[in-house]
Length: 172
Image 1 (tube, helix red, strand yellow):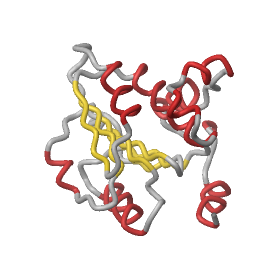
Image 2 (cartoon, one colour):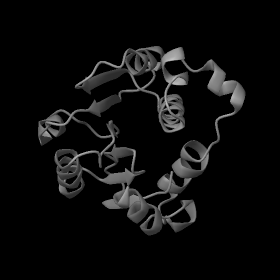
Image 3 (cartoon, helix red, strand yellow):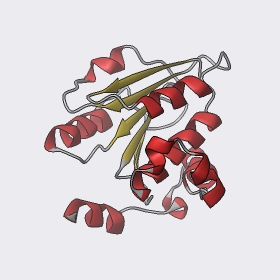
Image 4 (tube, one colour):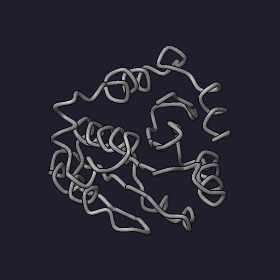
């Protein structure tokens, strides 16, 4: 819990970002509220979860609708069929982009060998354990990674060659 409060007080809102891409992402996707009607449309599995899980699921849904992609990979220790089906629903031949949803404790940077420009990594709970935190920190340091957005409960990794390397701490 102490880590969360540290993140909360150190992080910024959209106004603390100086990247037009990240500002727009935070403003139009991350900070969009989910109405009560939309919450009732969430899968029953997620409706039975905590408000935090509902909020994360709704955010991932908005991210998937915002960034067209043609393929996805789900890497997780525990099978969350609702996340897998959400990824499958939004998948189409819109763009040459791969989205990786990663929910593992033991992972190395081999995933970066396959990523291309415009691919996205969604890291679930990057601060959940020491292993995940070490993995998250290694991702941020890697030269192939251009943008990281730490929302505490979710980490977003972007590979945008046209932008300079930056790490953002955003309140969510």
